[in-house]
Structure formats: C-alpha cells, structure tokens
Length: 118
Length: 118
Image (cartoon, rainbow over the protein chains, first blue to last red):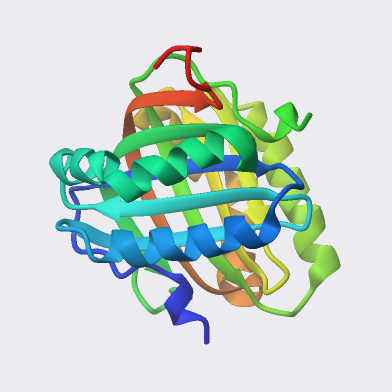
C-alpha cells in the first residue's frame, strides 16, 4: 500500500497547483531539506487539501498541491519563507519549471474493475 | 536542456487531466509498450495540447495531459484502444490511481530571476 502518496481530496470543485520542474544537479541536500520544509509548511496553511509529488532519476519532477480556493493559493504564495524558497529555486535548484493553476471539476479513483461500478 | 519534457501549452484557459498512480510490480514490458503507445495515440487526437509525465523508483507516477476542451477529453476517453488500455491498467498495472480533470486558469514558466520580470 502507498496510500500516503495520494492526496485525500474532497468532492470538487477545488484548486490544483501543477508544478512541473527540471532540477539542476546542484545542491541536493539543500534542495531536499527545503522541499521537506515546504511540504510541512504548506500542510499547515489554511485551505491546504493535500499534495502528490514524484521525480524520476533524470531529475524531472511533478508536484501537484490541492487547495480549497484561489485565495488559499495566493496566501501561500505570499508566505515569507515560501517566497524565500522560491527565490532559491529560481537561482539554484530549477533548470526550468512550468506552473499552472487549475480548478478541479471532477475526480475519481481506482482501480474499479468490471462489476465494481463506474 | 530537457525542454521536451515540458508541454508547450497555449495561453489559458485549457484543460488538464491529472493522473496520479502507483504501479504494481507486474508486467513492466507490457506496461511500457502500452504507455508509449497511448502517448503516441493521444498526441494524434483532436484538441491534444501536450503531456508531462514522471515516475520515481518506487513506481509512483504523475502524468498530466493537456487538452483544448472537455469535449476533447471525452473523445479521447471514448477511443477504443485507449479504453482497452484503461481496462488493462485497472486489472494489472495500477495498484491505485487518482484522476482529476481540471480547468487551467493561469500559468507561467521560469526561472525568471530578479530583474527578468514577474
């Protein structure tokens, strides 16, 4: 079981921040510590719903965080320690990233095999 | 450079299908071939905009595909070969998955360092 890798989100609508990124090879320890700290900090923010994150051996990662509202995303963006980490990210940790903010309209999980429903 | 890992999407709004999944250990060759085929097939569908995908050594993956409209997502969902692959996925390849359909409202890329703009 790997249930802890999946976000436990409520019924839509809610919001997703999709962050696709390519790590530089530099500063793995500093990056790892900051990434852990950002997850811990985000989880304590009002409106945080959950996070899913993975990265392959080539350093290409996707992190999706889920939020109750756009206002919750804006408040997290304005958090001072998060702003500092984003600046470090732009300067040292990310070769490139794409960030998208999206409104989740519908969602389902699985596997639901034949006969277990839609 | 890893530009080919990032989707080249237009100005929002458009749609994202966020697929978080935990692979079973079974059938890596069959899964890999089917995954490659699905990307190839999706890329030829009307309304397909791009795809970003990664998976860690524990088999936890996130794939985000981008589409012009909900109608394009529905048409891809109804594609016979894709339906067959989804059934195989539920039966053999995925221990668990969560799928979310979301409307992308805003997006930006980076790094934009200090002095390079917002």
